Image (cartoon, rainbow, N blue to C red):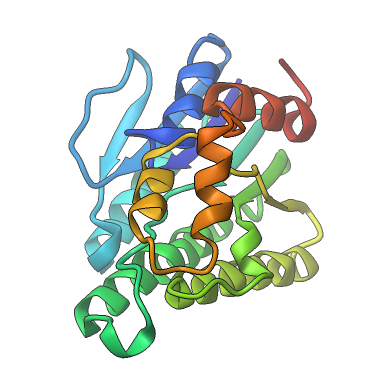
Length: 226
């Protein structure tokens, strides 16, 4: 059996990950979402608002993870997928609450959950993987995206660091490319950015990637099964 933890599965790439992985009867999936959604039989959703994660949320995650780690689990994978673009604007126009919310979702909550994932699993002799869904914005600054770029860059460096600290974990930062998601719709609404034409042209020329195809390719490349 394989145990997956996936954050942000109500839409986009996270939903594609869940849909594809849940078809395999050997997979058990824990999803983490703000909404109290109902998963397929045998899988469990943990309702956590990542914008304001609490000690109780961490304890609930710890308890559920321990409960699902049976002797039959041979591989465990944490897919850090949940994120928000937040408000797109120059920094002087950004709302302070939105800045805090974006950093909590994209960075702080991810660090806390991955920390607990390691705490629970580090003594267990199974195949352990962390996949962080990153972005080109982690390396290339984009005007109006300062907080998103910051948080993506920071969590990417965190993943690289824990890969050095814990050699028993395989840690990957995976850049999926530009996909046809709600995020892209938000980006095209922000016409003041110098990058607007680039993203609009991708959309107009039907060059946005399909999330199902992207998820399937990531699974094949990093998780070694179809």
